[in-house]
Length: 90
Image (cartoon, rainbow, N blue to C red; front, side):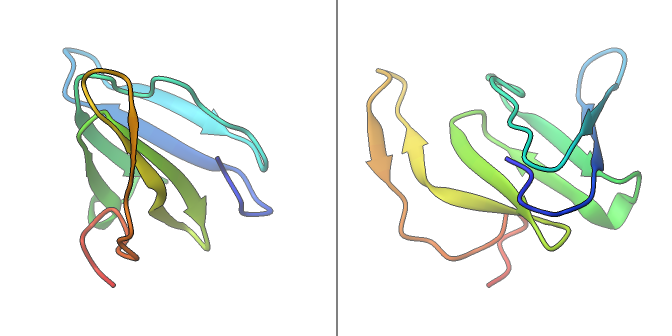
């Protein structure tokens, strides 16, 4: 979910053709990359994030963050207590 008050552009990398998604404030994307991918935010290579495909993530203050739940392969959710952003920074 984009929790910022401005839109962001996410580029999904890893496929033959990158996919650009415009994410408006308050918008939520489902199944962004269920098999994992790299997501670039706002076209900046320093804003590349590795997504495993099982995370719930949000955009806050121009940064991707894990939202607290990870989905297991069986579809059950587990609690993620990490306060790290998607780059691994605290």
